[in-house]
Each structure stands twice: as structure tokens, then as C-alpha cells.
Length: 187
Image: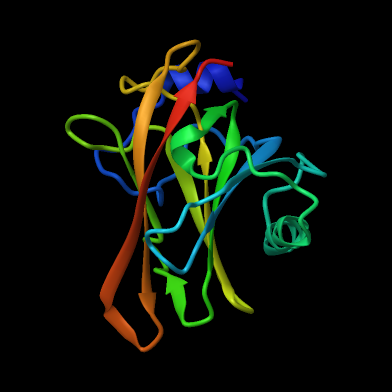
């Protein structure tokens, strides 16, 4: 099997903003960034970093729920009050959690990423929906840390704009978004 660096060098990312594509390798990230989306689109979106308990296992709903419990208990401090102040470092899961009993993240399209021109996603892949549980809904993807040419990012920096798409239950036509940005930075 190819190593991560070799696989990344040969990977050609798709030309759109979706996270629902296979990535370059089946490796599993050792950490995750949890973005807690408020019900109010104008409110800050705190971001939390977690080292995963079992980095050999794929991310599952129980791990996402455990992270939410820790965040809600107040024992975990946010990296920043909003993603504009966050630098995503390292191969990691990106988890987006909407806390609103009346809305849910849009299945199959809960989060999209854009980078520069032509506004495509070239590093966030293997999207998965976790559905609705209690007042929460969640989606996740993996940040493979690739540059716009599909090569390992290394010590470069790239700015991304992401959007979380959600709708009020029973009103799927009214799509609302949270639009924020983050920066992929060197190791």
C-alpha cells in the first residue's frame, strides 16, 4: 500500500466544492476539529480541537456525541470564538455540528468548501453525514492538507471559505448557511 505522502502526490482532486468524494488514501486522522454551529446564523461559531481516543478507528457518531458532551460540560475551551481565528494544522477530521432542534444539516451537502478561483475544494474529502440526534445534527470530512495542485501542503498557507447548509424541518426549500473561513497552515 502507498504511504500517505506517495498517495497524496498522485491524487487529482475533483473540480467542485463538495466534500462527498473519496480522498487519496484510506488513512484515518488522529485528531478532529469540531465546529459548533449556533442556531442563529449571525452568532459566533466556536471551534474545538480534540486528539482522538482511538485514531485507528474511523470517526463514528458516538465519538461525535462524546465531543459534544465535553464541549457542553464547559471543560473544553474553544480554540477561537469563530473559525476565522483558527489555523487547521495536520491531517484531521473536520466536524460540523448544528445545535438546533428545529433545523438539520442538509444530508448529502451539509458542508461545502471553496478556495480562491475557480472556487473549488481540493483538500476536504470523504464526507459523511451523522444525521440528527437530540437537538443536534452533524457532518464530517477529512482535511487531507493538499494544495490547489493536489500536492501536500507542507509549510504553505491556504485560506478557505466554508458553508454549512441547513434547513428548517419540514421546509427543505429554505436553505440557510453559515459562511466562515479558516486557514490550512504548515505542520
